Amino acid sequence: MNLPSPVASKVDLSGLLDAIAKASADDSITNPLAPAQWDILSSYLLPVVLPAGQVLFSQGANDRTLYFVESGSLSVHYQDEKERLRLAIVGAGSVVGEGAFFSHRSRSATVQASAPCKLWSLTAIRFTELTNRQPAIALGLALAAGSVLAKRLGNRRRRVAAT
Image 1 (spheres, rainbow, N blue to C red):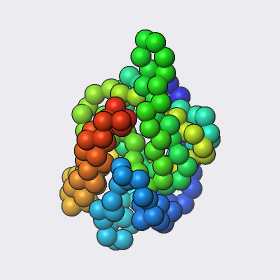
Image 2 (image 1 turned 60 degrees about the vertical axis):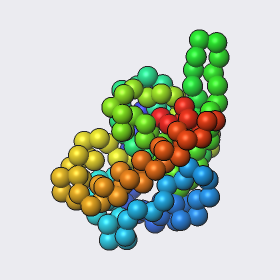
Image 3 (image 1 turned 180 degrees about the horizontal axis):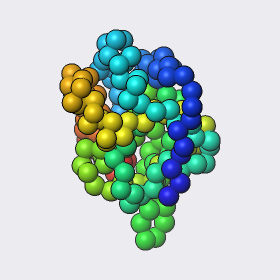
């Protein structure tokens, strides 16, 4: 599995907040936090930059990282014995990885950059730290990501796209 390397850059979430505010897809994340809470959360997130074509994570991987999409688009694929099936495109202002984040199960699909992407990663360990130190922020994030998961599971076409 090819995991992207976090890139060193100034932690500025304004692009992510703008993407969330402008997102119009049915499964976009809603903004669960006040600006001061985003400032606190920023120290728990790592930026990830993906070139087009790079795999973010593969089906079957045991990783619970949740990714917030600031820019670009990601293709979600499920591989069965016969062929590769594209399930969904996830764009800016949404999240990927919410299925494994909540279920503690392996990834249900492969996610690959369709275009150059900037993401923000929140590992399970950092989320646990956030839960202990800033429970209101952790709860807001969990509810927002849970809402995305519920929307995807409720949409028959995108159900398996809950990664």
